[in-house]
Image (cartoon, rainbow, N blue to C red):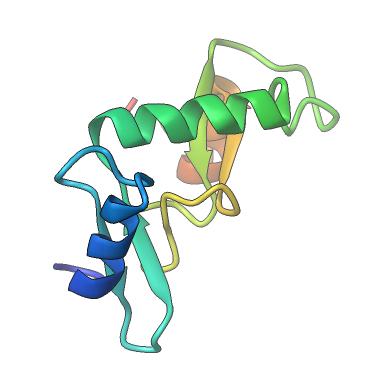
Length: 110
């Protein structure tokens, strides 16, 4: 994979513990030894629900007025090597603040 190699033992352990329910979800080991989690399907949905419950709205609402619906935002983005589908790197942001963070005001993939 692009940002690391699949760690079969760590992925299997998460499946056995019931953390991963979608068979496509994997744990990657980066070259520096850190983990990158990539979630799919029900696992991604569950992460999104946990993050939305934790943040209770856009995390950047104190900076400026929010605009648009809420989205799951990664910081650093998943397109960068530091990105991961973990609660520590995911936040709830409105469309306006998500675009500012990921695309410096450009629409990007939205």
